[in-house]
Length: 426
Image 1 (cartoon, helix red, strand yellow):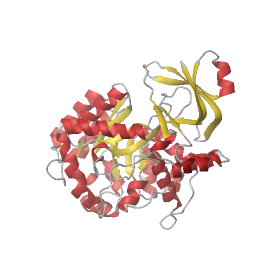
Image 2: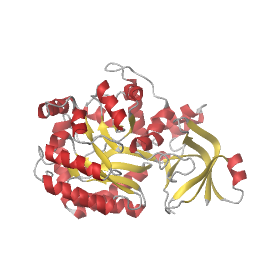
Image 3: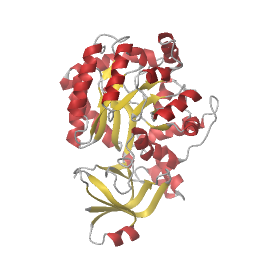
Image 4: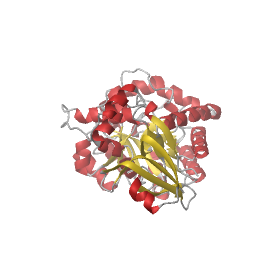
């Protein structure tokens, strides 16, 4: 066992923050070989229970759970920062040409290495990401994540229509390949597989039906896609599926709404849709920097909470504008404040943090596994420096509550504040 002493943040079962200004985190090997949290709390209390444990002391630092990114596209690493007139033109001009390059295993491997460097530099220790329609893109990302000991979930994109050459796949072969990749990677070390229809307009009924059958056959894998991001996209789905009650109902009809199903955006949903999300156990990946960048709309956090709909935060790189969880949390606060299309609210800084850690773990179907520093959780954590920049140091020195401290990180922090990332690797 080993212990780490610094300020310590974690969350209780109700999502409320637990904070020790002088905390002690004790970790040790778990049954699967990964380090897990053995004990956590005030230094005074925990040190009494573990008097002989070796302690690393980080004075003036904050230990917090590693961040979870609920939705991003690793093949779009080189798309970030590309201007466009909206979602659909942006896909055609930038995204699809870049994704076509992932047929080359060497290119996929090089981008995967850079991508994981960026995730860890920003304190992200668990991610659910899209690959591309190419098997090489999945193999490259899984192999690199496995090498680093990350908890990571991805899947081959399914898109057999309304897609250009180079990314469009073959219906039958795409489903065979998905089944092959599930058997190759799902459950190996800390890896998981996600059945990944890009979005309803780019998959035929046969492909979506096959995806639903795979999801039923492999109940512990994930499902990920996009829904109700952009009004033009919603109108397109209405034209393609006039019999469906809503965009979300299309996925329900193919058996793709269930526990461990995560849908990015979920902006243009109604009360019936949110109730369906809640009853099915599916979750929303709110992607505020992407939604602001592409002008898609504003996620309604209050309506999601009222419906009991699981949700968490996501960067959505490359539509999203930063890998940084701090930037994502700030954008979520801004989206929450918007009051013209929905009631405005001020999301508490600790709640924003929960949505990117323990709350995201719940949305992902991994409560008690990642996203928190309570006993039994895998020991992924970040060490944050409140003096990383002069302005951050000046503001945090004047913080007189936990909420003020966390909000200073959210508004003023970036990767410079992430001094160290510790993974649950022995």
